[in-house]
Image 1 (cartoon, rainbow, N blue to C red):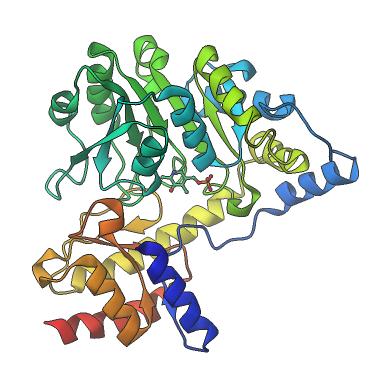
Image 2 (image 1 turned 135 degrees about the vertical axis):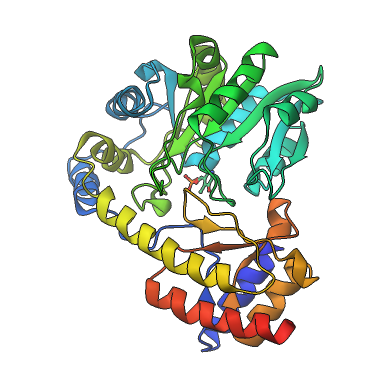
Length: 375
Ligand SMILES: *Cc1c(COP(=O)(O)O)cnc(C)c1O
């Protein structure tokens, strides 16, 4: 469904129409220069051959150090598998871990690929709907109630795509307590950890306690933090037997990640993090602009997101399905957004603000006109 809207928006653009898109989930910045330079240098140095399946030793080491430094997670290089993006990390994990009949708990609204990956692995996604009132966060009670004897894994994404919500350290601790008490595994998708606003803080679930650490697998990557979506580099970190199993899956499917690209990722983690500041400043400003528009729209209810680069307003008061809303908006006002139904949230639409302030303003003016035409 989302691809249909996206394909239509692109076709309209090819036909010369001025389509404004809020649908892309990727930073609009270029990859920082020093990261590109490091990959170029590696290419010139002949880093062009097959490498170890689990990743270049330098990169596995740099990732382990980053997890210690930023996340208080005591992993070594042997706990890390370098993958072709965060998506591939999750896919390898599902393939390695999930057996037919296993249940995987996924709070909704969710990132589109989680349930599909679980199904590909033969497992059963158990979707737990959250509410606007709880700021789209799963509560410890909800998590507890969703657990059965078949439950294998809990998928935890904070900051969240599509909601932009960030679980506070106390909320993370409360969920970790359920994970430990009920002896689950949890995969923490932390790909947006650096995009935080209004003083929000990110706590890795694995940093809560040694018991939580044992049960946590981290999935993350470079795409969203360093504007490296096209590079395809991510990682999985966790207990060695699980990392070995996921490495076997990768070894028989894709083998190693593009060798010279991995050296760009080494630079991203080893060198100064100053490049993040201007990007954070831009996202902060854009978020302010888009929220002012969204909060002024009749029929829109939008909890304030504290992370990532999305807003997910509830439009149920308008009495129109998310797919109808998005296709009409695209047809009549040439603005592309993703219908919430794709994320298990038909009451909502998702807007990405990874685009310029000027584009946001032009697009939101059109959205206002469209909403007025509905009401
Ligand atoms: C973008 C994204 C990913 C993975 O991105 P890659 O480009 O594969 O690294 C994983 N999880 C969420 C929630 C995302 O939004």
